[in-house]
Length: 377
Image (tube, rainbow, N blue to C red; front, side, top):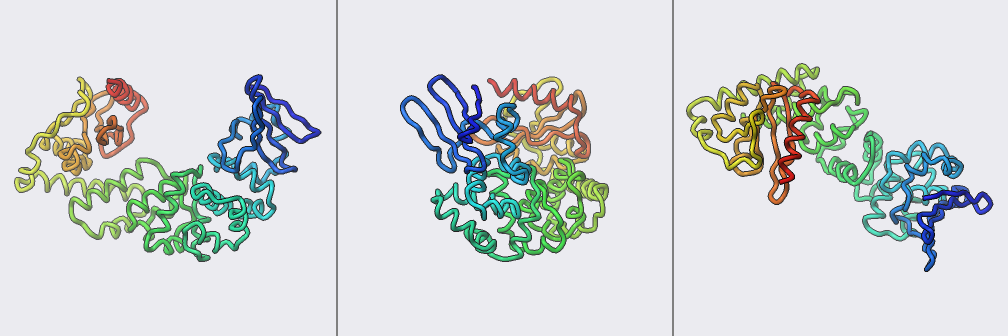
């Protein structure tokens, strides 16, 4: 691929082969893409897939003049919206009010662009909607057309915005008490959004909402998930009250350990032991000397007791063929959980040390290598 700049015509020219090339116009004349071949010239539509990613062009020395012609506020914001970055460049370079909306409220602009792409809006309809008030734009995107909803939208702070992020944001707005988030949440990162959707009671104020982005980690997320799972097994309906009393990550771990002890004690009693005195379906992947499938409920109970976690709460999922747990002996003593979906290869779900502590990179590498090798057959 070769790249050349035609400064007079304000066009960036990209040659893929001797017979196929593309041209991209500069910002000041409105960015468009055109595909050129021996047979025809084809102007690509608004949501056509660009033939050269913007990220690549931004780093290519021969594209620097073209790239720097894009206003800095657009360049700074567009990196989070790579799956439709060309469409954003097209709209913001052709329509002043589209540019102004993208600069002042980029997430709302991204939302309406996604809506246009999914529903194959015409360019005329898209420009009409972008010209509406922000509340009306929210309504056109299928979200509440209120000032409170616009305020909430500004609180989302994801590293990137794609189809997954779009679905997640819409699910947050579907929560019955989503308005309460505005009262106690400064920012909503990806992990907190997923947790609120999975456990709507977390919309209520807890120490979790006060965490800064750097304080979130997978251990905290998994501890929360385990706390809810343990509470369900223990039939505790007001677990959110206990979470609300936590003032730190350490408090949450203490709560988790307390619930784990309660569950393991209950399950060890004869009344519950009978349920667990059963063999599981055949392990989806044969183990080895250090990765050993747990093949019955009694051993699963013991794994939870030994490792001080809630492995026993997966009993029904394992018995129904939806999950499987392995005991890992080396390089560290850990517990491995695989998600099972019919017609698909087993997928890593969890890999933790005692009390759900993080495993080392070496342990993760050993387990992943084992899983990859076995999944090939």
